[in-house]
Each structure stands twice: as C-alpha cells, then as structure tokens.
Amino acid sequence: MKRALVAMSGGVDSSVSAYLMKKNGYDCVGCTMRLYENNMIGEDMLSTCCSLKDTEDARSVCNKLGIPYHIFHYENLFQQEVIENFVSCYELGLTPNPCIECNRHFKFNHLYDKMRENDCEYIVTGHYGRIEFNEETKRYELKKAVDLTKDQSYVLYTMTQDQLAHTIFPLGGYKKSEVREIANENEFKNAKKHESQDICFVPDGDYVGFMERYRNKKYPEGDFVDLDGNFLGKHKGYVHYTIGQRKGLGIAMGYPAYVVDIDAKENKVVLGKNEDLFTRTLEADHINLISVPDLYEERHIKAKIRYGMVEQAATVKQISEDKIVVTFDEPQRAITKGQAVVLYDGDIVVGGGVITSTVRE
Image (cartoon, rainbow, N blue to C red):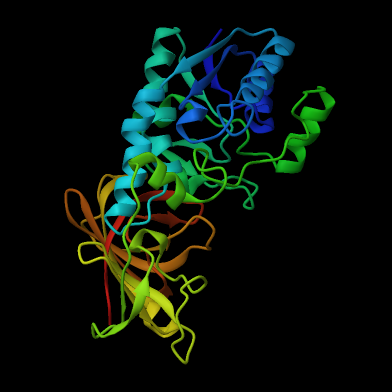
C-alpha cells in the first residue's frame, strides 16, 4: 500500500483531500505545519492560520478517518525564509507574494524531508491543480484545476520535476461545491468553514503595521514626484504604496493619480495617469520551467502577472540561465516588480519567474 503525508490546515480542502486519499487506498498520515507563533504577529492563539482551532479541526478529521496526526514546528525557518523575505521585498520597493514563497520553501521542500522521515512516497495538499506525466516529453506537467474559479496553478509554478513526481492534488478534478458536499456527507466539523483571503501572518490586512511591529520602527515620510521628478507633495512612507494604487494617496492632482513607480532608495513615490501604468515588456529572474527544459527559442504563449487575472497572449524568450523576457501582445496594466509572471500553454503551466523590471514605452 502506498503511503502519503497529507498537509492539513484545518480547512475543508485539505480535509477532503485526506478523505479522498484514504478512499483511494493510500496509507495516510496527516500533519499540520506550524509556521509561526501567533504572538509573533500580534494575534491570539484562537485566530488565524496556525491557530489552536485549526489544529483541533485537523486532528478531528484525522481521528474520524482513523489516520495518525502530527504537528511539525517550523516557526524559526518560516520567519527566516518567508516573513523576512516579505518585509525585505517591501523595503526594496517590491510587492512580494508570500504564498508562492511558502509553497517553494515549505509545502514542497521542508515537508518533503518529513515525507521521507515518515516513509511516505507522496505529499498531498488541498491545492486546486492537476499533475500529469507526459509520455511524449517524459516530463511531469502542472495543469490548471477543473474548477477555474479555484485554480491555484499560479502559486505552484516553482515546483520541480522531482516534487511533481511525489505530489498529489486530489481536488484538481473537483469543483469547490463538490468538495463541500463531500465534507458535509462525512460530517466533518469544518465542512462550512470559511476560507481565509488574507496573508496568513497578516490577518487584518495591515501589512505596514505588521512590518513596523516586526522591525520595531516607523517608516519615514517622503516625496511624491511626477514622472519628470517634480515634487508633488509628501507621502507617509513608500512601503504604504503599490503599483497601480489610487486610493489613499491624499493628494490632489486635478486628474485621477496613480502610483506608477516606487524609488525605495530615495523614498520617493512616482505618480502619473492611468495610461502611464501600461507596459508590454518585463524581465523576470528566479525562473522555474516545468513543461520544457528551456525557452532559448522564442515562443508565443500566454502569461499572467497576478493571481486573479486571466492570462494574456505574449512572447517569451530565455536570455540567460535564470532570466526570461516576456513581451505581451497588448500593453498590460500595473506590471509590478516582485510579483510572479507565470506562463501557460493552454491549461499547462510552462513555468514562471519573479518580475524584476519593466520597459516603459
């Protein structure tokens, strides 16, 4: 009997994943990764991801399924590899995606060590995505989920061939409504549990407040400037702003003003008009290619530059071992440094990388 380590958050998706794996004949071990102490983020132990309630819910499901349950502690590593990266990126004027970093370092790296320690062959998570082996190319492929409204392939693009070979996403072929129905049928106590839409360690959405507590400092005020560098007014600290932001600027321009660039070194925030946000070309590094070994030959694909958008037609070319250039057929709004660009061929994830720069036309 094949053995699987099931990552369980206490939510309905991971619970149903564990149920489906056991139903399909796998010897399952449930586990929760404890990533931070709640006092680290100014929250009590009964709220947020990694709370006592979540671990109790995960343990309850495991008990109901008759499978063992473990809690693995990664608080120090999570602080070093995800939280520190998150804060440092904002301090550099970037907009990070901590969910991607968590997947890269924890669910599909550190948890693999636990998979082997527990004599398991597979990691199982409640992500909405699909993994298939392509007999023609002899490569594992990451594909979009059947339920496109829940598809999480964007945040999974960092997975390697070895990781894909030892990972199962049981929910890839299900719709969310079907998953909740399975949970109800099995009387899981978390069947109606709401999903968190926030960054797990910033549950109130106030990332600057979190950063100030984490660094024990206040970020200083600076200058708003226009595209020519002319002074427009004072801002409350560049970390408060992201590319494309309009609300909360607190400055009258005579026309709708948007954040079009952030100069972290000079503590300046560049404002412009909506049309100033549109660019066609970006560069990305920290690339990971899944369906192909390289992209040195220019290729027409589709790409998305943020989680919630529909991918757009573009051309991609690899220009070095760890860098790609993506040029969209049509200008895209608010391409943001620090976010991921993920490449698609139909429902197949070609690969992706972290946006480092854009070319203003």
